[in-house]
Length: 569
Image: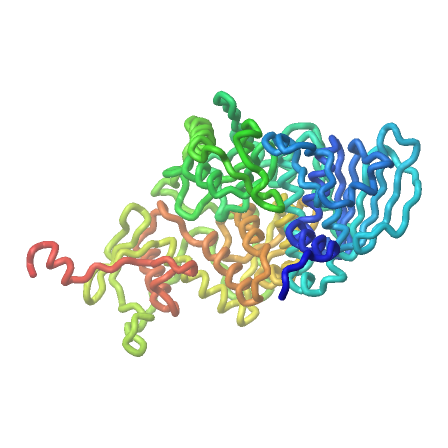
């Protein structure tokens, strides 16, 4: 094909594809414009995951009547005027492509008014072209409404996820900006339901309480460290407060929300040796430095930045977090003599229950177990003779050919996991209800997961009742969770269900989470009968050598290895 200049309309579609990846991209561009306009109140409404409708309203400075048409022209911006300005970008938006890119892939309406305008200006655009223009009435500020996103681009629509997933991305986006701009009053309504509302009082801890929970907000540690031209501020969790994934790590550079492997590594390295493997902190970190020290123009969606000095950025963030963690309380291991604490006010439901377990760790009397190995493999264990417990965490047992050291938590996870799936297949899940319900506050992402997976969770024994805003009453749980930290368990479970997995994967995740929270913990002393009962139950499982997450339940030291170590071979 010969070289030729592309049609301007095609060029605009290509540019739109770079900026508008999904509905959350539209929300991001519009909210950033509202923040740059000095808004103190920003309201976002969506329908159908943002595909049917996105409406962003602010009380910012507005767009002048004689500039509103120009705002929808490519490369038109009020934030950059010369090449030198690119070296000192201080606004969130600056490329001048957001509005025309959005208008190229959707129907757009805008109503805007400045303090000097007598009336508001109204424009309606379809396929990037103005089809209606008039004067209207509204207070100072801007409202932009986006209809039918990607309607003319079925190929793009096909690659979007479910409405639940798109809503989750939008909720997460607005949550991030609410955290770093606590002085702005944010409101998010999705499909007619209020999902997020902040007070705008300027206190980041209050936003954390709204987004995560009051309990989390009270425990967070304040970051506030300046080092010459750089500063690190925000909130981080103490080592005693952690999560099972990185979804609670939020990073901002000059209050711009970014994805940064460098800042992630700096934060997690600061917790080195303070958190268990697989656990991650909660962090809201804002790294401030002169605009000349970074490049924010490395990605069309402005979600990545490039530091002039990576080592300085890493050191500043890591050191600031380490300093605040120095005085934080370390995680505490339960006393070896402690037993599992019963869940508060539990009673056993009479529906579909055969023999609900006691909240304390008690196992049935040992039963005979076969030592036959299937087809010559190791899917079955030989009969083991329990010798004792090591460090209140490992069960020592003797087998026909050597010594087995069993991780009691991982082993009990496997036992519970198999039991839950067996009960689920028979539709006889053991349930325990609350004499007094437990109140749980959920994040927007967690609430979306609950709304879409509520029926499945009920099949596993959960009963949560809406109690206003994002508060819920936990009225029943699976019986295996007796003694667990119910609030933490439910939140982590909902975090894990926020994706678009196959139905079978969802059931696996629920069973894994229940098994992890219901299992006995490391550091918990067991008597001989309890250890024997656990080993017998482990022997009867289909995969006794691994826990549901794939970690080994035991290590094996053969008689031959022992003889070699003692110089007898």
